[in-house]
Length: 102
Image (cartoon, rainbow, N blue to C red; front, side, top):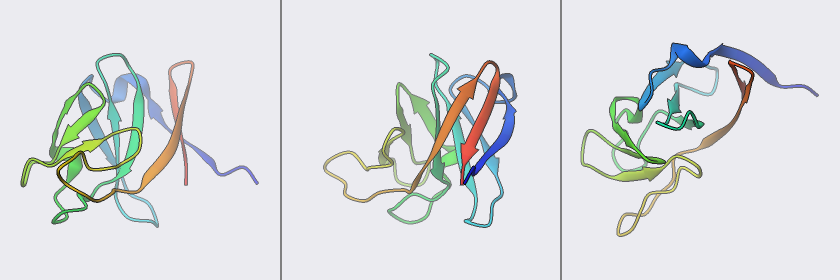
């Protein structure tokens, strides 16, 4: 079964920024790094539910705006000493188009 959905153009997400996508699984934050890597996480910090889409992206990490937890964009895992995980979604870049698997 093909569950890939066309999301947007790469340039629709600023470098070191994000875009929120509404889905049946809840809000999904899609992030773009300075190197144009794309990642997607459930838009809730595992700590207190802060909107990760409002956080600061540095490298392949987003810092939650509520309590400064650092979340790895590749896995959704919180970085030590914090513990927890935001659900990640598969994304791919084909040409200049971003696709997401729900």
